[in-house]
Image (tube, rainbow, N blue to C red; front, side, top):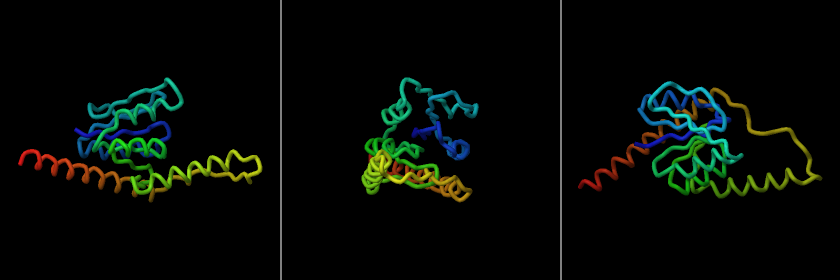
Length: 162
């Protein structure tokens, strides 16, 4: 059975994940560095990782596998999970792929360098706020990704049986 991993500490779409996972009867692991409420369901598990700043990301990256789905907005974590052949979606519905992750990592690094430059103009910013459209995009992408994984699994099953 495949798993949905949720990088939960700052994830705004946990409730959406729970609803979709329940509909498909997919196991969901909510990884966090602090205790949080999760549905009382045998399909949902809270995993606490408090050892270090990156403990949650490290745990998800170590455990995600082929066909699993990871929900995160963390680009380095997305890159690590893609390397394990997991599918990765951000909370606004963007699907991370092998084709775009390199450029995203490079852009992230450039932005980090610019932020560290004392001469750089400081702008308030960060990611845009979640909107109902983002939630809708996320739900559509999660549904598409689950169905894609199911089709891939059936194809592999037919190949091994036939």
